[in-house]
Length: 569
Ligand SMILES: Cc1cc2nc3c(=O)[nH]c(=O)nc-3n(C[C@H](O)[C@H](O)[C@H](O)COP(=O)(O)OP(=O)(O)OC[C@H]3O[C@@H](n4cnc5c(N)ncnc54)[C@H](O)[C@@H]3O)c2cc1C
Image (cartoon, rainbow, N blue to C red; front, side, top):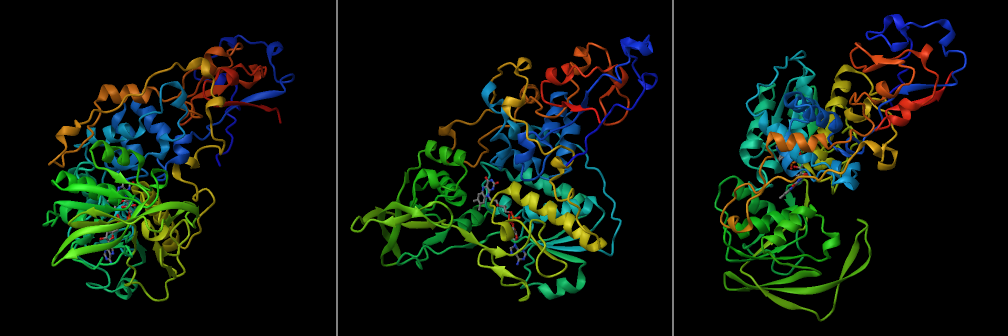
């Protein structure tokens, strides 16, 4: 939690801009009769609170609104090496509680992030220097968790080697999320920046096959396991061993790596998560007739809601409350899939209502291929047997600390959180823990907060906390996108990057909740002219406390709750 900042211990003689009361007499000093006094305090904006990567959203929006695009982008890079990726695929929880909602729609934060990343495309990356060459860290997996960890280690001066079993780096950003949502050039340029910072990535190198876990334990100062979820769950349907019953992640990987995808004409996709949505939309783009079946209803679908909308808009039907029970074959080919209708029963361990088969409701769906996408698990067969693992992943705390000193784990394989941004946050926290381990230190309570919350008070500013006299309704704008009829047969990116004028407008809609953007209201409204500009770094105003009578106008006229009146101590 940030400490209160009583910016009040200066005399009027120190003030860079003299208050109007300069010609003061001791008779108008307020010191003795003031019983409350103002403090500048930054509180937590809901966007910062909700960002799993710990991005300082309110401040990158402010910099953007001032046209300082490069600085805004660099501020994101302090917490995440993937603004171009996240600006495209993050389900943007930061927007979920944005106070702008009631005044024209939530700020289009992800589009601004994407704009900043894309417009700084050519910008040179700051060189980082390796300070601890003999403290190299091994990272297993080059997904967002592994690469974010490498990025933060490098910035702190630690070298790292990333081991990646695929021929190209990026994890699910490379082999899962298709080009129509995340073009590979965007990923390539952000990974290139990580490599330029000193990270070595060894591709086509599978830990367990090409190098053992024990060898890594001997050679490296610490290990970070970030292997994601790459093993597909079985359907549990009769006949699923057929060669045309294929896991969705396998199909997506083949497409991403330019291999023969082997898709047939009539494809039944089973599942309701992101893998199901992307496998179905990819197969549809490649000319297949696709149907999705999901055993619950739309409300329980784990896929990102916008992706479900896009799938439906692209003309792919979803048959809800349905699951396959048997794959019927005719010789070497699949002829049809027998499905059964479900109804929802009591909630299961996931909190979602359990689907229960309706006896006698079996029916057939014509299909010559089944793509399974009912969930994935990590493949942890390579780790030391002393490491505590469960079926769902490695047991680790929020900072990736496992039961073996020097071995850390994060991303999907430890948290199961299932988004790129969560994986980035997990990799960043693990980097802090690894540095502490190597340095023999302890994480302070402050270190345990995400970076964007370290500078602020824990009070979250809500709509009703704002002074609404200062905010007008302004409508949210969306980026343009290619028409539905242009999508078939192509993997062209659907959404386009906003231009600078739109990004500027959208950033200027930000109400900067709880964060002082130096709007001058306190300065203007102070009837005693006791507030002046500060020339101290990080401090916007100073208060000549001997002229403040504690009227509280600065606090009540602050649009965003950055001034608070407190009793005189
Ligand atoms: C189809 C699909 C679509 C998705 N869409 C979105 C989306 O729109 N938005 C979003 O936020 N999230 C999305 N996700 C989820 C997101 O991609 C993951 O949550 C995220 O990538 C997890 O990051 P990670 O670093 O933990 O693991 P991963 O990204 O899975 O990376 C792990 C890496 O480890 C490597 N590896 C595994 N075992 C070994 C080994 N023994 N040796 C060496 N390397 C190994 C793997 O090859 C892989 O490259 C999607 C996932 C899928 C499958």
